[in-house]
Each structure stands twice: as structure tokens, then as C-alpha cells.
Length: 249
Ligand SMILES: Nc1ncnc2c1ncn2[C@@H]1O[C@H](COP(=O)(O)OP(=O)(O)OP(=O)(O)O)[C@@H](O)[C@H]1O
Image (cartoon, rainbow, N blue to C red; front, side):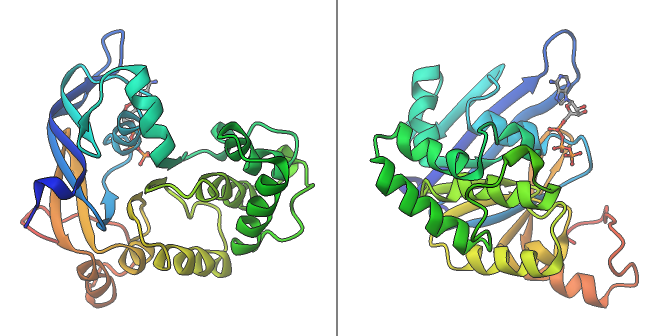
């Protein structure tokens, strides 16, 4: 049962289209994320999953509807500045997240911005890098990292801020199996709410509790994410990504 005072994200009749005559991406979308909820969001390429995450962060303005975060309606850039201190977004493309010359500078950036001392920021950053198997990466040149290393460094910039909510946009892209396992373990040890957008059902079944699909501009609840797992291993389609059109997956 949804308890209104436990709502972290609450969207009502949200609509969004990209400017200059772009197609409608979100159409009267209604969505609730409760405290402690770990949600997987799946859907076709181009269905609007990234757009949805960017709307939560205030990176894109809704054309209609109401967005409430942590109980407050958010509309202005000032409102969303507060949101960005509480919600961490891992961008789909690491190059959108990383901009400093070295990994340590990137990871420490947000902490320094918050007023942490350089020593404190360094210590927390090194700890986070170690947590993500990136020990010794602190002085590496960011733009020379591999794709998977960039993804991990991006995740470090988000986790180091100890957000109350995480939005992860395809966090496993380019990662090897061992690194994926590391991320699964990090996520399973986090006591916060998050939304993970991913096309990797097995990963979602191990990191989330519930699954939703973005379809036709709306978010539809599919059910318990363990169903993804059962489904995966018992279904004749196996690991081939596919969709069912008659009810739950
Ligand atoms: N800046 C933009 N201007 C116009 N259209 C855009 C822009 N960004 C995205 N789109 C379009 O909006 C639609 C939704 O894109 P979005 O990236 O949100 O989808 P997605 O579900 O995250 O896709 P994927 O699974 O491929 O990452 C797509 O058709 C995309 O081409």
C-alpha cells in the first residue's frame, strides 16, 4: 500500500515533448516511488526512460503536470537545486558526468562544492573509489579511461555524495562480469531508494524489488522483480530481450 508521507517521488499527469515539434515522450504520466523502494525501469529504446530521469532532476522542464520530490512540489531551478543535493543521477553516458582532468578531482568535486575540506573530500573519495574496485585510479587521467572504467568513475562521483535517492541510467553498460558483481553488492548494501534503468534483466532481478515498464508515454507497474529472474531462466526466449503483450511478464 502506498503511504503518501512515504513518497519520495510523486508525479501526477506529467507531460513532456522535446521542443521544436518533437514527439510526445511522456503523456499524463503518473508515478510514485516510496521510501525504501528499489525499482527497475525497462522499456524499448527511445521509450523515454532517460527523459523521465532527467525530468526528476530538473534537467528538462515538464510541459504539464505536477512533480513532487520528498513531499515538496518542484518547479523552479531553485527548487531543483535542492533536489540535486538529495538525489544522485548516474548519466547514461559517462562523458556527460566526468569533466575534471583526474579521477580524484571528478569524485571530490561535489564534496568540495558542498564545503568539505580538501582532506575530507580526498579521504571520502578514495574510500568510494576503493569500494568500486578503483583503488589506485585517483591520479588517472579521466578522459583516457576505458568505457567501463569511466562508468565506474561516474558511479563514484554519485555515490560519494551519499544521496538519499539514486537514479541509475544503464549502470552496467560496458562492465565485465566481475565489476557487475561488485556493483550488485554495492547496491545491495545501500539502504536507500533507487530507480535503475536497464536492459539487463538478470542484473535488475538481483538489485531491485519491483519492475515497471515505460510504454506509450506512461509507466506501468509489472510486478515483483523476482519474476524477471524466474522468467529469464524458464522461458523459451531465454536471454533474448522480448516483450509480452498480454499482462504481466
Ligand atoms: N534533445 C532531444 N531532442 C529531441 N528528441 C530527443 C532528445 N533527446 C531524446 N530525444 C528523443 O526522445 C525519445 C526518448 O529518448 P530517451 O533517451 O528518453 O529514451 P530511452 O528510453 O532512455 O532510450 P534508450 O533505451 O535507447 O536509452 C527518443 O525518441 C529520442 O530520440
